[in-house]
Image 1: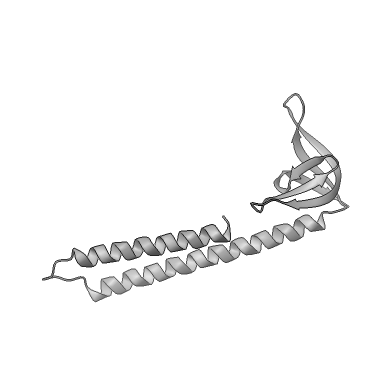
Image 2 (image 1 turned 60 degrees about the vertical axis):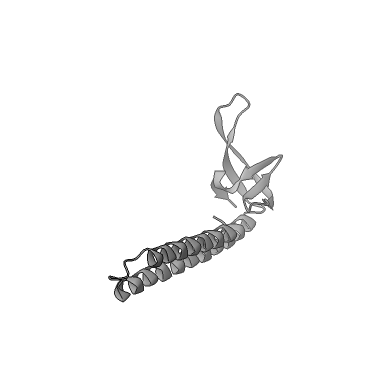
Length: 127
């Protein structure tokens, strides 16, 4: 999940919570209003959820950075990777990494000879 998607999820979550809270306040029994303890507990839970969303976004950024560093460290190294043969059967090929390509969606690929290989398809690395 990208950082932008995480922010959108957190914003959506916040808007949904606020709608729910307003609906609860509008529909509560005036003779028995919502207890302050209950409202405080809900706000605390919402705050914790927002912090978890923020941590998730931060961990996603760290993971992206680590993957990019790892991929760039593979340049010039020999890798084995999973591929599909012309007849459709799976095979393992080996070649030297010449370039790292980062797609518009953040996916990382390696250029190995005349093939573009997903980083996730690499099964072994040799010097």
